[in-house]
Length: 90
Figure 1: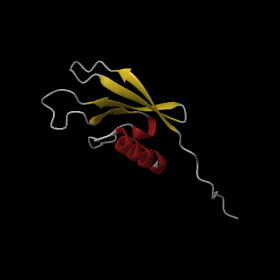
Figure 2: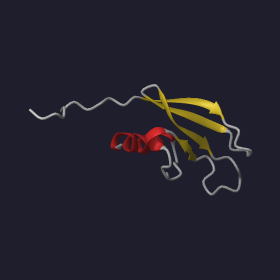
Figure 3: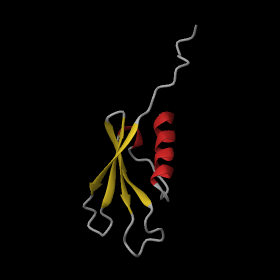
Figure 4: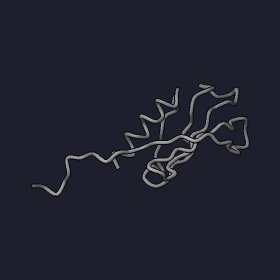
C-alpha cells in the first residue's frame, strides 16, 4: 500500500461580505476563507473606468495564493472555481 491516500481532502470555501478601503468606489468586498483560514480578498469593480464593472478582482491572496495572478471574474462562482483549482494544486 502506498503512502498516499485515495481520499481527497475536503476544501470548504466560505465567502464573507466586507467593505474594503480601496481609495476608490470599488468598496464591496468578499473575504475568502478555506477551511477557516483567510486565503484571499475579492473586490467588486464599481469604478466607471473599469472595462468590466460588476466583475470581481482578486485584490490579494495569502498563503498558497500569495503572489498569484488571477483574471477578473464575471461572477463569484467563477472566482470560487479558480480559487479551488489553485488551492488544491498547491
